[in-house]
Image 1 (cartoon, rainbow, N blue to C red):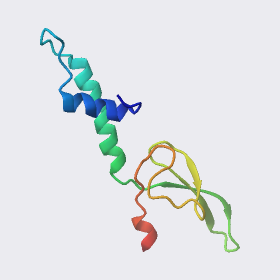
Image 2 (image 1 turned 30 degrees about the vertical axis):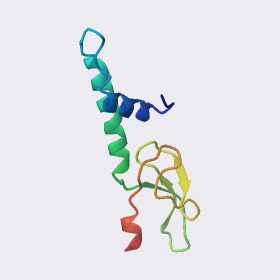
Image 3 (image 1 turned 90 degrees about the vertical axis):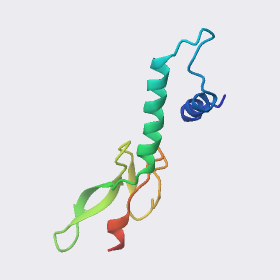
Length: 100
């Protein structure tokens, strides 16, 4: 079995590996795997990043130079770290406001 907790959950689901030799169901394992697979689905849904400002421009406007992953709160530079997915946790990032 793979090292990935998500792959392990998927493997158990595909193999219907929730029952012992006496046909007793391991309901706790089913719930745990459902939570793990929901985590993957949640990460696949793009979320808008948070922004942080740490200075002002010559007009007194805040300069937002850091974006923060909405899932793991990892910090990235606005002008340099342009990712569709957070490199730290895999969260899909919604940049739709950036195109306007």
